[in-house]
Image (tube, rainbow, N blue to C red):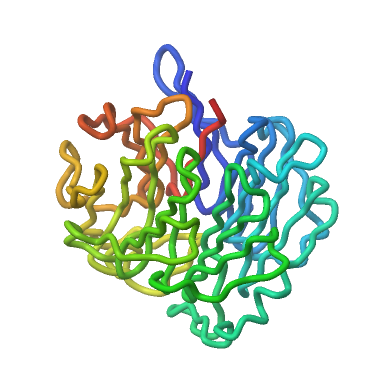
Length: 342
């Protein structure tokens, strides 16, 4: 049976397909949940980042939680668990925060180490998140499936930064990247291939994030938010895009914890095969009235694309988005989706 975890801006929810439909279970309530990650080698091991309450950890699939009390940040907008840097059988935890900082833990969240060289980069004084221009944050983290030292982070708004020694030292804004980074994906089946979704478009790297080139051909909307790819097929990619941030997030200040439900997103989900141009998927309303904040191809369902929307709806695209069905699920919002490893 399909199991997918979601964050709603407040709660962490388990969505489970059962014989007669879908079961929705709130696992962690009212914490301002933004992002989450599952250990690629242990489906019971989870980390959740929140808007103002730091990070929460579970080692039993979300049945019980403990707060990462020693994490020296309360606003956590990206989390990741390394598939290749393992200590004691578990992946090292990463948390990306606001103001922009990156922390990692090798002991299950008891002690955290800061990547202090990140904040010392020459470009750091220029980082700025437009709705709150006095600050910025680590919006995206990408970790290598086979190189424990390779860490990529995306700053909103500050570009893609790269470390090859686990976060001790950093290369500043990589050539060709977009500065308004929203998502990064380092492909598990092609370890040098990375995609960036950003305000401005899509960029691709074929040297593990060192240099980047635009990959926007076919996109008629350039405010790109989410991305996904089948874990066994690096030639197929999906992104969601809107004409701009106002359409994507609604009028008024963009506050990640509670997306504004007003307004029409005028959004699309695009698919790309190999060197072909991006093309909108068919079978969904066109344009989409709500922004797809989360895209997911689960490891156990490599031919299925899940799309979670700002208005709390969830759609499933079969045969890599060739046909779509709206699932009988309605949450407050869907900010992130993750699935357990296959």
